[in-house]
Image 1 (cartoon, one colour):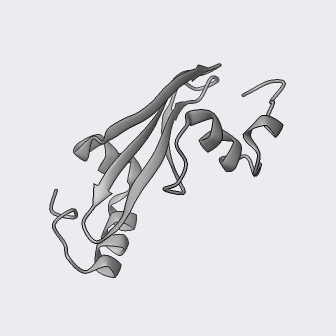
Image 2 (image 1 turned 90 degrees about the horizontal axis):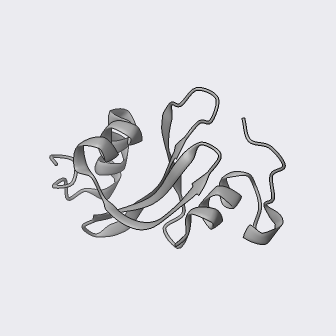
Length: 103
């Protein structure tokens, strides 16, 4: 919560990076924009609004092979889990992202 209250945008971004996105999302929570399922289980697209800055938008996924949860930041304009996963895999068009297997 202290990071959210820092007015200097650059300082807040540096502190967020040092604190770690996984831990930040775990402690602050966030608004669930979208949720769906993949081979790892439920995915959630989360948004955390920041004063005077773009929101932190991240995809929470579960690795199907290790069951470890990861929180991966995506651009703030993304509004679906599928689009976020496609962007993370390097696809501009979410319909082009069709993995045959996920590990």
